[in-house]
Image (tube, rainbow, N blue to C red; front, side):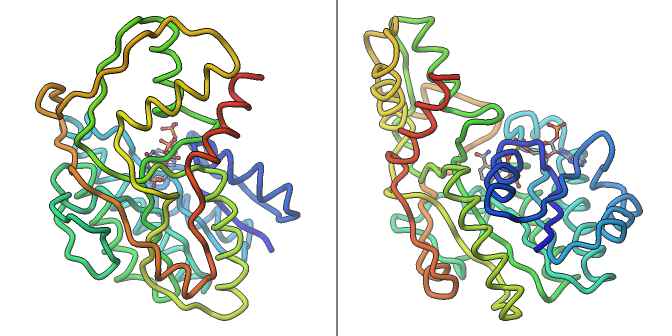
Amino acid sequence: MKIVIFGGTGQLGSDFQRIAIASGLEVISCDLPEIDITAEAQVLDAVKHHSPDIVINAAAYTAVDKAEQESEIAYTVNRDGAKNCAIACQKVQIPLIHISTDYVFNGENTSPYIEADEVFPIGVYGQSKWEGEQAVRKVLEPHLIIRISWVFGFYGQNFVKTMQRLAREREDLNVVSDQVGCPTATRALSHALIKISRACIKNAGPWGTYHYSCAPPTNWYEFAQAIIEETRQYESLKINNVNPITTEKYPTPAKRPAYTAMDCTKIKRDYAIKQVSWKEELKQVVQELCKQ
Ligand SMILES: NC(=O)c1ccc[n+]([C@@H]2O[C@H](COP(=O)([O-])OP(=O)(O)OC[C@H]3O[C@@H](n4cnc5c(N)ncnc54)[C@H](OP(=O)(O)O)[C@@H]3O)[C@@H](O)[C@H]2O)c1
C-alpha cells in the first residue's frame, strides 16, 4: 500500500512515517516548502505524480493562540488546504483521511463527545478546522475525518517537551487543572491510522467522521505531574512543586474548551481500534526523549 501524507514532517507526520515504513508501507511525505497544501495545483500534481492508494492530510496551521491574530492564514491552511486535498483525491478517485481536532467542540459537555454532537468552536483554530471538515465532506465521498486531541510524541514541539524543559529550569510550576481532555500519542495514533487505511481500502469504507484518543480523560495538571514523575526515572530535576491553577489565572489569547474528552466507541465498532493508555504511551515517549 502506498500512502501520501501531507504534513509529513510535523509531530504526527514524522512518527507516522517512521512507523508506517517499519510496517512495510510505502510512504511519501509532502510538506513545505516543496508542497503547499494551500496551492490546489501543487496538491493535485503531487497526488497524480505519486499515485498513492490513499492520502492522509496531517498538515495544518496548529498555533492555537497565534491563530487569533493570523486568522487568514489559519483559514487558508486548515479550510482551503483541506479542501485542496479532497479535490485532488476526488480527481484521481482515492480516499482521504483528514485529521481534525477536539477543539471543534465548545467544551460545555460533561460526558465524552460523540461524533454526532453539535460542534461549536470557540476560537479561530477550532473554527478553521471545522470549516476544513465541512469542505472535505462536501467535495469527497470516500473520506474519513478523524478528530484527535492533546497530541504528544517524540517529534516536534508538544506539552511533554515543554513540561520537561520547565521542570529542569524551575522549582515551581503552575499548571491549569480545569481543562479536561485525552492526551493522544502519535505512536498509538499512527498504528490506528495504518490499520484504518488498510481496512478502508479493502472494504471501501465505512466513510465518515470518527473520534480517536488515548484514555482515560485527565487535565493538564495531572498530565504535567505524570510527565515529571516519568522523567525523574531518568534524570534529577530542579522542580519541587507543581501547583494546580484555574484557566482564569492563566489567560491566553485563544479561549480553550474546558472539556473535550471524546467517545471512541464508533472507531472501535467500525475499525476495531481500541483506545490505549496515555500513561503507557508516555512511558515510551519519555524513555525515548531521555535516552536520545
Ligand atoms: N497538536 C495537537 O495537540 C493536536 C490536537 C488535535 C488535533 N491536531 C491535529 O493533528 C494534525 C497534526 O498535528 P501536529 O501536532 O502534527 O501538527 P504540526 O506538528 O504543527 O504539523 C503540521 C505540519 O503541517 C505543515 N504545514 C503547515 N502549513 C502547511 C501548508 N500550507 N502546506 C503544507 N504543509 C503545511 C507544518 O509545516 P511547518 O512546520 O513548516 O509549518 C507541519 O509540518 C493537524 O491536523 C492538527 O490540527 C493536533
